[in-house]
Image (cartoon, rainbow, N blue to C red; front, side, top):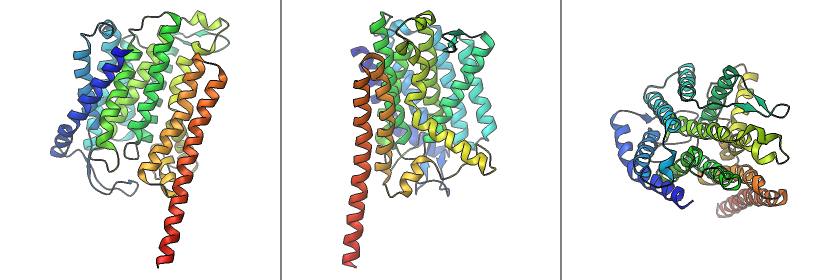
Length: 369
């Protein structure tokens, strides 16, 4: 555990130090977000935050390779994840600079998933009528779909300063805890790609947040959201490959099924936002990729919440789903229920206190006027 914590800390420090230099580079090459009607920022802001994350990941890989436990992870599988992540960074940087169309980005994301497949990273089974081992072609299709959905879920939620980085950090921490504890409880090797990748995800997000929190000095851009989505999906898919599908038929099925369910649980809020956006746009006769200003974070702002408070509320919503699911895998259901109630209650308290404070401010303003 200490080795992975050190890896996450290293990734965080590197990302924090590298991001200002990437900001200057983005401004020099014109990768800057201008002001649009659906945006909430008020000043042109550099993109390419994903490049800072990628550089931090590369340096962390180089340094962490010499650590006793983490060094055992390096191999064919990790090479495939690195190449796929590098491809989406290049794609995302091009989009941040030149605004690629949605179909081109979707095709590029599918190609990144194809790189994972070339390195044998794919879903091998699904919990259908017990356990169903998938034909290779079906497993490949499901793998591509999981990668596409995860990438675009992260992309859709990246609409407020610090929002996507915070949500992915919480999701990554939950997934890391599950992957590591699963190895401990079941006697798997603790040197696993999912644990290493999610530790790096948490690290780069925490290192990036100080620069990305409101008011943001730099955005992660599509380079960052696609990079983080690709890493999350790759970690989930590789974890399923470590689980013996035959064990699912045993009495204790819950923890064994969770490698497939957890990615959707930890990204429940972004996925819900994605689904609602697709339905909303389809009902209005628009393309599912057509941008609008009706995402969950936009509605929180419209309700009178500040940028920071809206982000915190969505952090708590994410934690309300992600953390109890992880707890449920290893502890009794009541422990998971208490955890969920705690985070759900915290989000209500944060929201209600803000509304009370806003109401008091308005009342004082009316008296003074």
